[in-house]
Picture 1 (cartoon, rainbow, N blue to C red):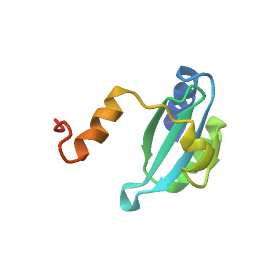
Picture 2: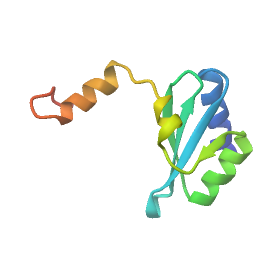
Picture 3: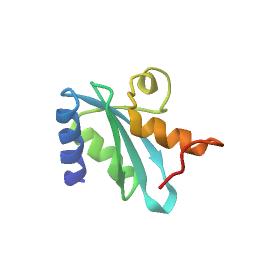
Length: 97
């Protein structure tokens, strides 16, 4: 849990000094912590359980949203990599490696 909190704080520091997140239950795999930085950069981490994800985000001091929608989703900034990957899913788009 302490390592996850450090990783969340490091993410925030690299992306404008703050971050917000959302925790999604992954079943037996644990929980996914999706992070959005102040600069719109985003990333994710996987915790071994939902409870550990909650404690790590609390220790890191970030705001956690119940859903990944609205203002949080609107702040995400994507680049050429993401657009290329999304296009690859569409018929006729570039193939995924």
